[in-house]
Amino acid sequence: MIPELDGVPVLVTGGAGFIGSHLVDALLARGAQVRVLDDLSTGRRENLPAGAKLLEDDIRDVEACRAACAGVAYVFHQAALGSVPRSIADPAATVAVNVAGTANVLAAARDAQVRRVVYASSSSVYGDARPVLKREGEEGRPLSPYAASKVMNEELADVFRRCYGMEIVGLRYFNIYGPRQSPEGPYAAVIPRFLRACLAGEAPVIYGDGTQSRDFTFVEDAVLANLLAAGAPAEACGRAYNVARGERTTVAELAERILEAAGSGLPPRHEPPRAGDVPHSQADPAAAEARLGFLARVGLREGLERTLSGVRA
Ligand code: NAD
View (cartoon, rainbow, N blue to C red):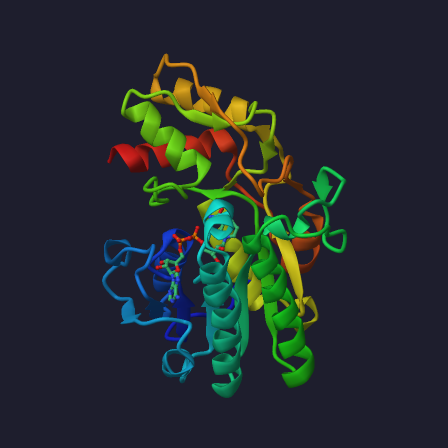
């Protein structure tokens, strides 16, 4: 169940980023008083609607986290350095933000006695787990510093629950996409990269042979999972849940669909596979449905159309 949020003070870390800013929109639409803690390193001020209060600060600074958490009822912790390749290139930066930063946010939330923390984990925690269908409790070893940082987030959340009795829910996002996802730079995600290439009349680049598969999930569904996690019964806390549709699309199929939707005739170009990428990623979404009441609503066709119209607008 989504909790009553009208007039309720909430904090979204990373709220100027892709997923965080959509969450901010949804929280404002429900009448929440929204505070955002973001250093604008990958996020953009323009992503934030009027009505959200931006605290331009760094989660590596515990005092900034304390100031941001003071007086809020819910913390939605989205701030992190994303991207597997970025973490392979600069593991220390990823660990500093994602691990130490998360410890700061959790400590500040504890001090402020917030009602609940919902935080972003990642499908990357499944690492080299063999089954194609990823199920909570069947994790493998992480394949990148980014994945290791998300495993550490889950460990920290569990420790904070046990040491301080906090209510914390983790969400393992599977390849979230949608409007406002940045196509910029070498660490851009696959969908905005493909869309940008197609619209610029360039061939989309596939790393590897394109048989690797992902469970692409529309951002509106990630937002819904956050709202439901905030209101789920206390027994649902202390775990991390898959947030996905439970479907699998290969990267080659994705390129085909995007080329078709964008009306481009250019075939994709292949480059060598990237280190740290997992071969297949498909979620079993059953636990999130049973415990949070979450079921993804937006299919890939509709999600790509909505993303494309966002890019063209
Ligand atoms: P994003 O880069 O758009 O958003 C991250 C936000 O965090 C940005 O606004 C950035 O400026 C902010 N940030 C980064 N370092 C910070 C710091 N030190 N202090 C304060 N703010 C900081 O990425 P996103 O795709 O919206 O990801 C949001 C969360 O979801 C992240 O935790 C990410 O690891 C996780 N996630 C995303 C996906 C996906 O497919 N997009 C998949 C799995 C997990």
